[in-house]
Length: 98
Image (cartoon, rainbow, N blue to C red; front, side):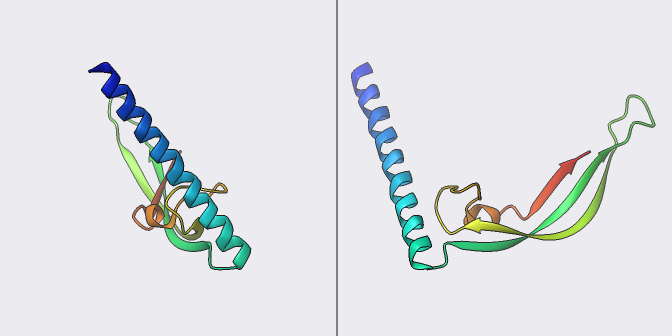
């Protein structure tokens, strides 16, 4: 039973590593061919301010700070320090806690 579990986990790890390497190779190819490796997504910035005026209450104030375009990569995994566009398009609000 343990041997089957170990082999399954090893196979999943190998598949994940291969998927990452293929994704990276495709992205490098698109960078080399100028084939739109990067995209932009508009992200709404919101400041989260904890109010400390009343002890014992956990009041929070939200202050919108506007929109900002953020660069992303057209890939399955994050590369070159950028998030994937599919992920960023689903998370269009960035909260900054102050």
